View 1: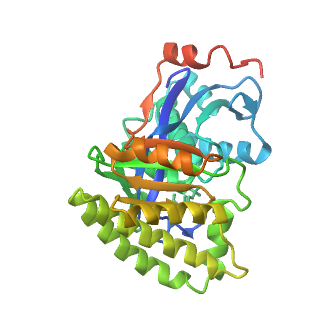
View 2 (view 1 turned 90 degrees about the vertical axis):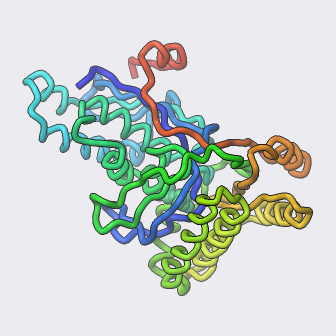
View 3 (view 1 turned 30 degrees about the vertical axis):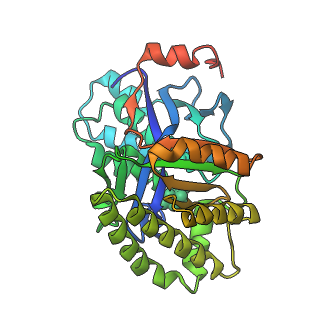
Length: 352
Ligand code: PMV
């Protein structure tokens, strides 16, 4: 065990979506999903002993809300349970039981459909493994099954590049692994049309869809076909094959919500404008494909070598949008104390 541990994890965007749980508590998905970990967006998280009596979350320097705190507390308990199985010295056993303070800095617009929970729970999982000294018994695949129980998409942020999260047979083998490092001519542009909190959380939206959508029974099978096509595109390093499969999948993802009762959608008229812009670019021979998540923002898969020009075009066409570009990012890494202090030492209030 260490006195404090810090980690950085990158966010990921699903190319083949996870949309539904078959077990709400363990967060077991109804289908296998596939994502690209992005280099531009990440969360930095540090865990250390807390001063008070409870676990505490400090998010971007602010004390976390009740709901966020309790989610983090439950998550920490998963690691405490693992740590209790180890043969620690007396001092370490006491530290195991002691409350933990979590300082987390999101370099992702929070809750804007950019899956900030993916990097948040992956960074927390990585730091907690270190804090409790669990590395011997918990390799990255096993760690991804823990990250999964914080937020489904976090399973995939335990790895860099193109990552698959398996349906699995139970909690132990519904893990993620890297299928390709993504270091070929592959890029992504994020067009953020709103950085406001989404109206329906992905958790609620997916449950409502599973419970009520007339199209949901078709989702799993259709998604498997899209996945097979996407995997072939990745094997061939063929952006068009991968992009076609990704776009086909996101259209079905939204269709499940159109068919929910009552219907829901995350698409706005502005999202459609960007989608049509992407389709126009394609008509003009530029390889680019869209996907979206539980928010109005649009992500565009494209050639990395064309991303700068495309991002400029999008900024001109949608001046009120925020446009970022990204490429394949790496898996999580530890942040050394000196590095952490340099970045955040001046802004953290350790007396909170
Ligand atoms: O991990 P959650 O509960 O935030 O759900 C993520 C759901 C989507 O982003 C819409 C799809 C995905 O596979 O990431």
